[in-house]
Image (cartoon, rainbow, N blue to C red):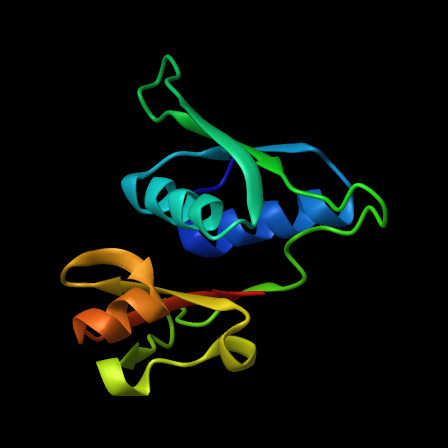
Length: 135
């Protein structure tokens, strides 16, 4: 197995692939950054439930229960994409944080005060690296 060069892109891709395959649960290798991103997705109502589990290799795993509309069977996540990549980092000031679909979606920002949504970063007046956008 090859080493993952961009763990955040891997995290987003696993979620995207699970949604395309209509999976209920997706397992992702854990890291503190990915755990925080998962908590944000849960707080914003994009995922149904999540659980952090320890594994024998101490890496840990995040189990995410995806959220679907009970009638249309459509996922709560329409689009999830990486903004800042290892080859092209995207940093922004607090007043320039992107508004995703005019406030309907969220941007996840890595700031000096931790990982948070774009709205939180704007209210705290902190800029940082725009990790991804979700709607």
